[in-house]
Length: 187
Picture (cartoon, rainbow, N blue to C red):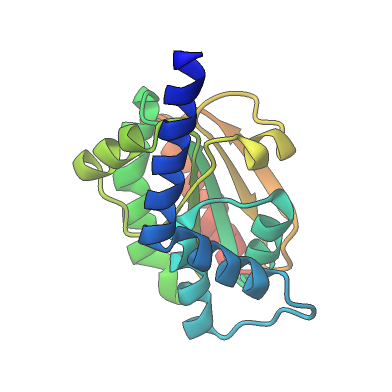
């Protein structure tokens, strides 16, 4: 009986904190924006949607609608976790690619799969990102794309079609990945 009462009190305290922090309002706002019919966002609007609701993935459908806003760009979608050793090598490379090819229409989007957000935050302190980072602790998007391993990445062409799937990252692979991006950007 004591355990039940303590659990209920803890849930109540956590719910109160969430309301005080305004997470619910941000979540509702983002979901309503992402669910709007005929969603066509301007470049300035994309960043406000991306930054809303603490970049948490609410659903696969909402994430796919967000990806669709980048139609016309080449998208490099990367899945990572704080425990993934090759991810430590991929972040500097993705920062470099984003800086080098952003004006040509490259968008790098990453999805973190850590269950504990603090682990991801500590990783990002050591390996900062100059690209968009989303958090999918439930692994919804990862399951949708049926990831074969970590890290996994995908390249979408300007029409939004999945062109390449990659597993792993190292110095040898990064050159091949860059050539694939350059080919798509030059189409």
